[in-house]
Length: 297
Image 1 (cartoon, rainbow, N blue to C red):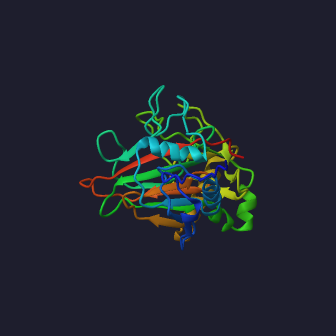
Image 2 (cartoon, rainbow, N blue to C red):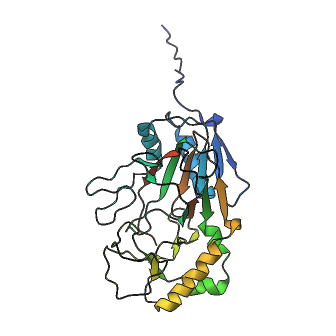
Image 3 (spheres, rainbow, N blue to C red):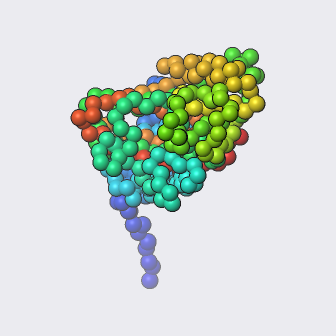
């Protein structure tokens, strides 16, 4: 007797042929369509997404609908989840317990409020900053609340050769904005070296090498307090101010207008992001997951 085999087609799985990745007409970013990330992904699709992420720094997935657990399962395709140490708290940290899925929302239990957030990278003050983050939009505003991402490799490459040579071996300390004494002033550079530290600090290269692409990155946020190791405070403050002025140019960034069901997966090693303020009377509910990272070099 001859037995014939008929393959079973699983309707609950994506097919790689349906997935389209379209680069934006912008300094970074690509849009992914034809994919339901709540379902299992084919190996070929995962590899395509990882390569596109290296190339474009951010990926925008449209028209998604998923639970917190499904969002976590999707994130796990790209790495382990970021869990901070108690001595280096981050957004939503509590001693011994930091949620993996963080509500970036202006509702009860949410974080970050409704005001403008300046260009920054998540977790740069930790010993092993997160490699990337996912932000999933459940409720969005009619106006305001846009998020902008900035290409730090492009910003580095646009520096003149003299500045590149000046900064190539410098080490930067980013101070933890979630650990502050009540009377400590907000500042963008720590010029008073006599001020006692209230949390551990971790110097990282100001010019970082991306661990996968090998690209050079100007690894500097726009406002978070920093200092340069072994550099005179006044000289360091002037240099950082110069570099931040260089960063703040539209030719380096892309602004995203959110729609319900958007997921943006960004490379936290090679980008900064900021948020526009929005009307507090409107609800804005997004969920964020961050991936573990490695020691910068």
